[in-house]
Length: 342
Image (cartoon, rainbow, N blue to C red; front, side, top):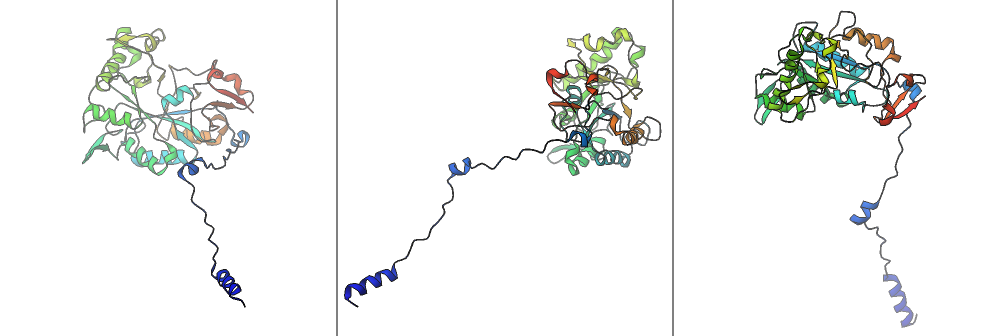
C-alpha cells in the first residue's frame, strides 16, 4: 500500500460521526405547544332523567342538641349528610337557589340548608394560636369536616340571626364570628329582632322587627346586604303587610327580600323558576325524622318518586326539562338561560 493510501485508511478509521441530539424546546416553544382539546361528552338527559323544574328541598335546621324535632344530634346530622351525599344531593346557596345559577354535576339534586336562631350549637369559634377556628362539634363544624372528606358535597348554608350579640357566642367578638362565616362562603339572613310572631304584629312593629336586624348587621358587617328571611314560628304577617318585606324602611335601611321561608312544607317544593313559586312563602322541611313530611320522610319520598325532584344537567347556564314541563316555567326565564327540552 502506498503512503497516500495508508494515510487515507488511517484517517477513515479514526473519523467519528457526531451524535444526533434532540434539544429541549425553548421556553417560548414549550409555551406554544398545545395539547389536543378533548370535548366533554354530551349529557344524556334521558338517561339521567334531567329535570330542572323538579323540587328543591330547603331544610330547616337549628342546632346540635338532643331536642327534636328542631334540633339534631351530632350522629343524626352526620347521618343526614351521608344519606344525601350517597343519593346524589349537593348543597347550594340561597343565591344559587334564587338566581337559578345552580352549578352542580349532571345527575345531581340541589338541596339548601338553613339554620335558625343564631345558636352556639349551630356555629361557634374556638381559639387557636393563629386566631380562631370553627368549633368542630357545632353543625357548621360538622359540615366543614364532612365536606373535607367529600369536597363535591359543598359547604353552602344560610344562617338566620337576631339583632343582638348573642348570635353564635361565646368565643370571639360578634365581628369575629360573623366575618368567619362570610369569609368561608356562608350566608346570613334575618330571623327578626326578638323572635316575635309576625302574625300578631301591626305595621310599625313588623317594620321594627325586620329593620333592627338590618341595622345590627350593618353595625357589625358594614355594607352586608340581607336578602333572605325566615319567619319566627313560621308565622307570616297578614297579607296586607307582606309588602313591608319589599317596600319597608327602618332608620335609613330599605327592605328588599328576595325570599322568605316558612316552617314546614304544606306545599310542593317548587323551584324559583316555577310559575307557582311564592317567594314570600317558600316552604322548608324540618330537619328531623319520625313524622310525616319531615326531612327523612321526604328523602324516602323522592327515592320512590325520583321524577318529582330537580335533577341537574350540569350546566348553570341552561334550563333543561322534559317536553311539556316548559309550560310551568315563569316568565322571563328564557331571557337569562338557554332553554332545552327533550
